[in-house]
Length: 296
Ligand code: SF4
Image 1 (tube, rainbow, N blue to C red):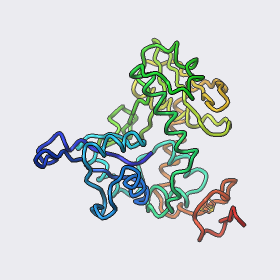
Image 2: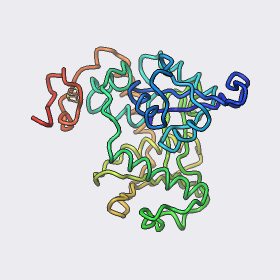
Image 3: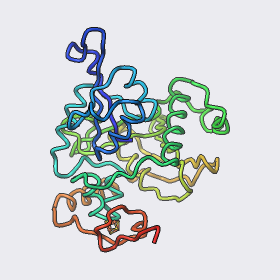
Image 4: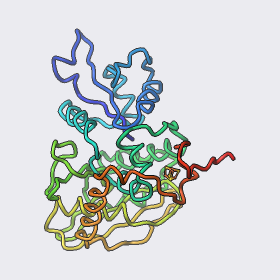
């Protein structure tokens, strides 16, 4: 989810009489912002060119639909990043860039990737993550149709679900939106037990094991907890109601090296070229020579 709502309402600049206002912005395609505005009942005519000003009631609704709450300061940082050529790395950017630099440029740099709307799978994925986060962090009962996942959370130690982590260029830890942040990620369930770390990641799509997301999570966890000697992780396939493979993620140096090499390549603009891959059939860039019309 890439729509954000800030806490401007806490400051005098966000208060107009009894009204308490916040900014709502996106760091991807503006259509995603318009879609969220429609969902929460904010009229398009209130669009301010790059954001919406929304009331505190609408802010709460947006969060219920998956928007991320940030501070006013974090919003300023986000706006600064928009002017950067190569984005802050994340699993999404790195994996997309690795698969196809051209698609990554359209999605994360030029922001020209067509917005395809929120489908049922995405809605369900957001709802599942939301429910698990509230179950772990606030002990809120899982909804009836998600009760079967109680077994995955009932014995967890005290942890912070959906932990937001950032690193600087030298891989020292920093805030998610700090001005010198180089890479960032959110860990669904990070557990620290002495010098051993565990990462569990909820998956709501079709079962398909690839440890890259966990490996990148391990780099962020190691930066935050340098005492870790061993890190293991696993995906939890919620539709199938089962754990996936367990991976040893302790070799964070190799992952770090791969990240740096990928970012260096991305920094050279002539690398933003199309790369034919198995997912071209699901790409929306119709002007690419490798575009495949799924309907055709
Ligand atoms: S169609 Fe394939 S090669 Fe072309 S931009 Fe999309 S993912 Fe890349």
